[in-house]
Every structure is written in structure tokens, then in C-alpha cells.
Image (cartoon, rainbow, N blue to C red; front, top):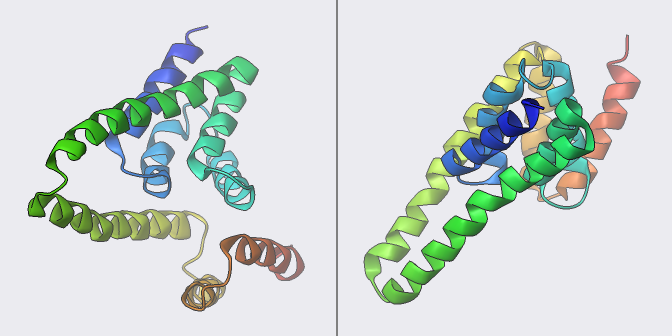
Length: 172
């Protein structure tokens, strides 16, 4: 039963050290792969959580928790994922309610967006490299993905289409 406290601590740590669901994937990769799941399980979990409705980070937590400790592991990982943001957001809300008219608060919030974007790019690059995406096919998929993102096609449709294309063209 030492897996459950380790799961809880891992998800507490990931959610305290990252700013959002997508940005936490890189940190979660570092913490979970090799300890709770294999690399291929993690990549599959990221893909599955992207397709399903709801929070990607919570679904990923439940998947990893379930893989490591069954239903109790999934529940513990979910609790570890929900607890830090809930406590933090309650505290920040109380503070921001008192400081809401200060100019520096809005500047701080606007400054977070570029930092999160850079974290997401680095995480995507790591997954791209590990998935063998540095060949011509990988670059084509990456450019096509950027194009459909620029055209604002719904993400769920893009992920489903990519899966179908992968099955048809990339199966051995």
C-alpha cells in the first residue's frame, strides 16, 4: 500500500509546481514514466485524455493512478490533483478580491500567458522527439497540426482525424 501515498505526493507536487493542465504534462511525464507507467502507456494516456470531454489533467491523473493502484489509486491521484489548485485558488481569490484595482495585478496575469505557451512548446517538442517525429512524416504532421490550429478547427476533431490517419497510413 505504499503506492497510494507516493501517488498522492506525486500529484500534489505536480499540481503545486505547474500552472495549468497542459503545462503539467511535461512535469508529470518526468514524475510518472518509469515509476507508475511506461512511456508508451503515458503517450496513450495523453492521447486518450485529449479526446475525452473534461479536464485532460484530471483524466491523465486518474489513468496513471488506476494503472499504478487500481480504483483506489485513481481516486488518490484525483484527490492529489484537485486539492492543491482548490486551496490555492481560494487563497488567491481572497487576496485578489482585496487587490483587484491595482494595476500590477493585471500586468502579472498578462505575463503568465507567454510563460505557459513556452512550457507547452517544450513539452510538445519532448513528446515529438520521443515519438520519432523528427523524420519527414513527423514534420508534415506537425505542420499540418499547426495549420489546423491556426484555422481554429476543434481540437477533438483534429485528434480523432490524426488517429484515423495514423491507423491508415502509419500502420506497419
